[in-house]
Image (cartoon, rainbow, N blue to C red; front, side, top):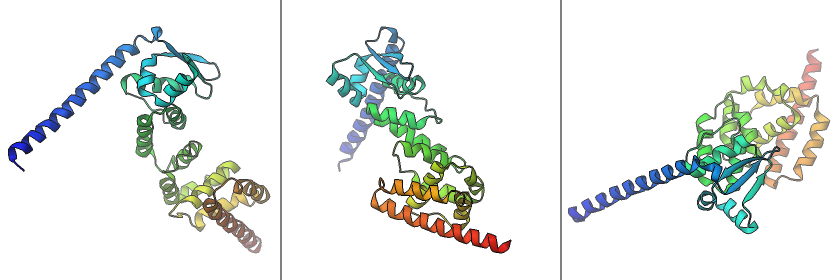
Length: 258
C-alpha cells in the first residue's frame, strides 16, 4: 500500500474516533441539562407498591429504551407503572437514559438487570454483568448464584460452582443452615456445572442436612423434574440418587460406629 494512503487511513480513523468522542460528550452534556429539568418532563413512571412517580422526558425513552418505547407507543400513554420495581432500582436506570452513567447496587443487581431487560437496555445489562464478574468471589458465589438464577443468567454457573468447590471446606459448614430451596439450588448448581466440580467431601456435608429431610427432598425432586429440561433432569436425578445412597451409607456407618 502507498505510504501516503496508509497515513491518510490512520488519520481518518483517528478523526473518526475524535468525532465519536465529541458526539458522546455532547449527548452526555445535553442529557445532564435535561436531567436537572425533570420536574417539567412529559412522562411518568410509577414504581413499587407505593407507586412513587418518577418523571422523565419521553424523548430519551424513545431514543434509548427500545422495549419501553414500543410499549408506550402501542398503548398511546404518557405514563406507565412498574409495581415490581422500587424507586431505588428504577431511578439509576432512568438517569442512565440521560447521561449514560449508572451506579450499580450489587445488593440488588438482579433487580436492576431485570428492569434494564424490560426496557431493552443491553448496555446496562453488559455493565451489570461486568460488575458481577469483577465482584464474584468464594464468599459471595452461592448468594450471587441464587440471584442470577432468578433472572435466568446462567453464564456464571461454572464459575460459581468452581468457587464453591475450591472453598468446599468452609462452605460445607454452611450447608446445615441452608433452607430446602437453597439446598435444591446448590444441588442443581453442582449437577448443572459442565465441569461437575463436586466431590464426596462436599456431598457428605449436604447429606447431614438431607438425612433429616429425605422424604420431603424426594417429593420436591418429583415436582422439579416435571419442569426441568431432560439434560438437566438426568444430571439432577443422578446427583439426587448419589446423595440418597450416601445418606444410607452415612447412617449405616454412624450406627456401626456407635
